[in-house]
Length: 169
Image (tube, rainbow, N blue to C red; front, side, top):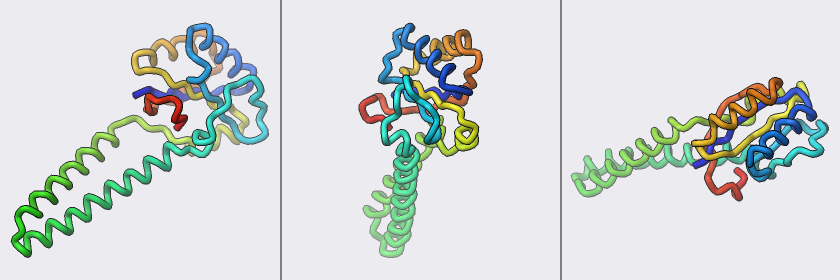
């Protein structure tokens, strides 16, 4: 799994300089995505995929979370009914499903997540969000590059993203 680093820039010039510095450090242009509100000049910056602009990551996450909760409570109802009917195989299966959904939910809740909805105020001030997808072991390197060479960059956090960058989620 990759990490997605979020940095805000006050203008296009600073964001372009940061992208140039990242490319000099062997970060692929495919790993960098710039996002701003419509009308802000992003010429020369790597465009986000349509799924990134629509924040599909959040929509997928919410859908999976609701499916997980629905599965858990359905299994809970089946567990209750199986105790009433003394069907212990169904009870055991329900407990396995409930345990699996619990641990799956717990695992994903502990993953760092940042949603684009948190950047609306920055976008209203015409700021540019740069998202950089890198392996976990390169996070510190990228942060160091941007802190040293782009003083206007504001670090806004780290999230996870699928390792298949072609998904552009």
